[in-house]
Amino acid sequence: MKTKHYQFSKQFIAAIKYFTLFFCILSSLYLIYNIYHIENFHNKYLTKVQNIYSYVRRFGSYHNNALEEYKLENHYKTNNVSLIVNTAGNVKILSEGIDKLRSELNSITNNNIWTIAVFENPANYAHFDPIRPEYLNQFDKYGENSVMYRIVEREGLINTYQSFYGCNLKLTESYTENGSHIQIRTLYYPIYNNRHLDALLAIDIKSKCFSETLQKYNNSHFTMINMNNKNNFYKIEELLPCSQLNPINIGINLLSIVKIVFFPALLLTIIYGYFKTYLIKKRYHIQRDQMTNFYRRDYYEKKWLKQHDFNLLIIDIDHFKKVNDIHGHEIGDAVIRHVSKRINNCIRSEDIAVRWGGEEFIITFKDMTNEQLYIKAEKICVSIASSPILELDITVSIGGTTATNTHFNDVYKVADKALYFSKSNGRNQYTIV
Image (cartoon, rainbow, N blue to C red; front, side, top):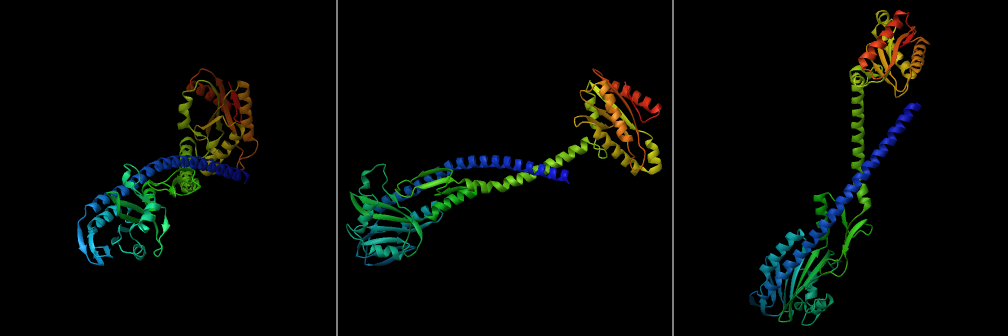
């Protein structure tokens, strides 16, 4: 029981060691992989935002060059774009351009454009795609130098026509829209003409557009990047272009890495343990004799053929043929197993024991004198004869020799002659030459 418990503890400690190794390797590799993709995602993310801005800026030219028509006070609708005329007069026809702008922006934002509105100054008319009560309530308050100007001033968009490369538009922080309760960020773009604020383009983008972009990237690249997590181990924190609040925090949380790596590391440990056990068993079957657990002759003989120094014993079970003939091969096999156990108890772990034939064994020893080999042979001989095996009196005969700078075949012949002398001289004895 103690041996089994020790073996289990040893295997468990080994499994923990390999799991820790695999876990550390996978965690490190996955962390490096995610850090690389943070930089990559960050660049793609900024490119996406800049593409949105680019299409929005193009609308200014479209607006300034749009054709005008005289419209009476009314509510007009073309496709999904509503035109609200509060005061009869000439109005710019923008429905086609708004449709195209939505189409382009939806392709970039994965259909997360909530509302597009174009407010004219003075507020005689406005375009909405689609029309929403929240915008209509605001529109009713708009007029020359009123709420529209306050929005432009609040967002820092006064006289943006004077800037060649600055932010002539503004992306707000995320907020919840009254009425709809949708979480959005609004992109404001004032349209100036001859230094006069002609119109204000307002585009509501669902805030989930930004999280969906990250989720899509994570799904396609098998990454664990997150946004706005304060406990990130590694992060890139900065404001979006033309935004002054709520900086994005793109990073990696170590706990996420641990969670995702735990089961692959555990699976690798199980697979490694299985194949290691399989290979050990396979190697054992190739190297070892199944009955005695000694090395097989066909495996170890080739090693001895390359060796030149020997301390060698040949051990043969006396009268083994009679054991098989009288008691049967099953008893004979059991005798071989018991004899091999007693031999194994008499030798060291570094000594080499080989089942050479049916009932014949060869043992080689390291760093042993002729006198020590004599003592070892005596010990083995006495151990086997000391008590019956399966109620049978079993003995062995032993021949041995020590030699240097000699071929194995020559050493074997000398030891075999010594064994023959032991047998012919009465058996149950040992001869060392």
